[in-house]
Amino acid sequence: MHEVETLLPNEVWNKRLFTGRWEAGECADTAVTSPGNGRQLGLLANAGAAQVERSASQAARAQRDWYALPYDERAKVMRKAAALAEQYQHEIAGWIVEESGSTQPKASFEAAISVKSLHEACALPSRSQGEVLPSTAGRLSIARRRPLGVIGVISPFNFPLYLAMRAVAPALATGNAVVLKPDPRTAVCGGHIIARIFELAGLPAGVLHVLPGGAEAGAALTSSPSVAMIQFTGSTAAGRKVGEAAGRHLKKVSLELGGKNSLIILDDADLDLAIANATWGVYLHQGQICMSTGRVLVQRGIYDAFLQRLVAKARSLTVGDPSTAQVHLGPLINTAQRDNALRIVEAARAAGATLETGGSADGLFFQATVLSGVKRDNPAFNEEIFGPVAVVVPFDSDEEAVALANDTEYGLSAAILSRDTGRALRLGEQLRTGLLHINDQTVNDEVINPFGGVGASGNGASIGGAANWEEFTQWQWLTLKGEAPAYPL
Ligand code: NAD
Image (tube, rainbow, N blue to C red; front, side):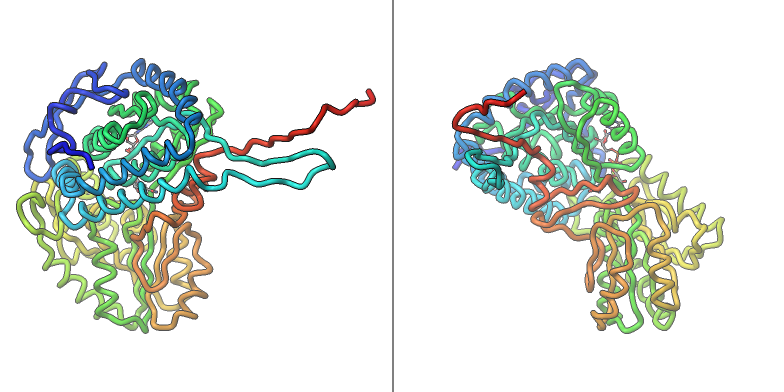
């Protein structure tokens, strides 16, 4: 086990980014500020377009040697990385709390699930890499999976460590090099922690680069000729731009985007469990999760009782700085995010919705909010809010629930609560989403499941579990004959 006292001391990352060594950024440093308490945690080095290009071409060279290593050498690095991530879980969770405003339980969960994604990646180098195909006599015909080369990973702020790790770990394990561009708002916990883990795990220099930066750095990665694929997780608006640019440069692209996810509560559901599930789905991490429950659809017979209890529950949720207090909700990530949530709540009221509770913010601390009477043409029904706002909508029949849930361009997650699992499954079969949960809420990920959305939630790519082979490798058809045939032409 490694004997450094601190995984990521400030002198390692402060004013530096990672290219195999820690060096200064080409663009101006920016302050790393805790959204929970305003403390400045250090200065972040930011990469410019030229730096991204340099890293991408270095990574392309390093990738060839990395893939040429014996498979168990690559597995050894992955195992060491997993052990380090596990050993320093507490410190890592601390960074997630401070830098991203996560509550302690959310941060601990995120650190643990990131370890799990590393554990899964440890087994990839030693797995079967393809299949032997039937062919003509005397010809050996093999379909084998090969790494793509350099994979550009662009990640968001909300689950910064896990959403980067779920791509970086399998991409490296399958023999690729990676240039990771974390969101500059969470670049330490979503980038430098990963750089440090792999540095200490003995990953050869140049195979992983971590380059914080904004849209300009992301765009440079997308257009670099040295990058074979972009794995992007973020908003649908930015995803469209990344998809367009990747198409122009003929790159493979995986887009994991936003959502407007319905939790459907049927009238035979247990009310206590319905409240517990809706509270978790709507308010976990202040609603800043792609799978957050964006609509709570409640059958008419239990609607009034449900609404009354959800309002009471929302009023009981505490909001504050998660680094010093045990709170249910931490801060939103920044003022832009807060103002957007406030705008939608205001627009919802103007369009006829009732504000049952909440709807205001003290600094970045947004009260748990409940909106009722939300109709289909209401902005709160249609827009992804990314804030702690429950949008509660009644329905009469199962057909109406299906119509309401499918009335969105998004298609990430959906969930149904009912004591009648047959009825719930029949209803669920009609929903257009990449993730579907019966008797659970919408926020779920276990690392080993394929994860991805349809429609405006993604481009059909999936990440996780068996899907990682499709995601991070490409097929090569290889044939072998004892001697070349004498073709008649
Ligand atoms: P965002 O799109 O603003 O930023 C995501 C990343 O993309 C950041 O690193 C950002 O710097 C970069 N970026 C922005 N514009 C870019 C461009 N033109 N070219 C290249 N890179 C660019 O998203 P966000 O606000 O950080 O995250 C919230 C969004 O992400 C929500 O819509 C949420 O639903 C979605 N999300 C989706 C998933 C998923 O797995 N489907 C997971 C988490 C978050």
